[in-house]
Length: 255
Ligand code: COA
Image 1 (cartoon, rainbow, N blue to C red):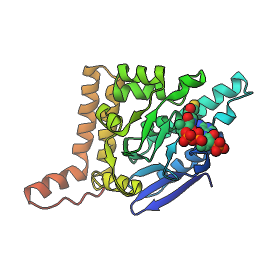
Image 2: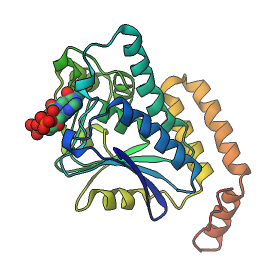
Image 3: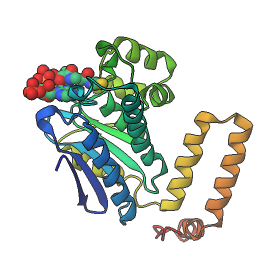
């Protein structure tokens, strides 16, 4: 199967499994990623990790061999399909972590930036090289990249196609950690930094922060007030305060 969904302890793991083509995103693979995200959403996993098979690439982008001889209707439908599939990660009730093990280019970087957070191996190379093909990104790259790294660097990346190495990506805020050793184990260790916290509260946190991108400050503060109030209304915030006052570790129940 070009896309595999498995379980690593309390986490769901999607592996893009087409290493002979550097895990390039055929339309079939995009479809299968969507199905795997739906399955992960229906499971009791506490986070979703996404990685690529092999040690060379997370994903080298859309499958260039499918680019030719497509009419405008197919092109629009293809772009919408990719955008909608990756947007499923925004609405996922659990956080997602891209485990970038090598190249993350074009659609591969767009998939990674659609995840909540990102870790990468030291040999990772991240870029949007579409300009070299006479194209621009189409699966969210022109929108998510500037939100993560700012307009200046996003424009440079989109207009030159230059790849960032892992250190540059870390400095730019494009990735959260550089991992050593087995990349999935590194991703699991990173996910453990938040996965024991209350899932609904993690979701409020994601929502509040990501809504800041599209919201005027006063409106954003109202969103924060409401989500903060929802967290206060949950049993887990009572447990958190009690645990602190009783000097013990909290036991959150996702309520
Ligand atoms: N679509 C389809 N096939 C791809 C691909 C893509 N995006 N990226 C790599 N492949 C295939 C290559 O055609 C090659 O297949 P082959 O062995 O049958 O010839 C195989 O994967 C290995 O890639 P190769 O180019 O030989 O590896 P490399 O180490 O020399 O270079 C890259 C690695 C990532 C720099 C190079 O493959 C590349 O530039 N890929 C395209 C990246 C891109 O433009 N992505 C955006 C698409 S919109």
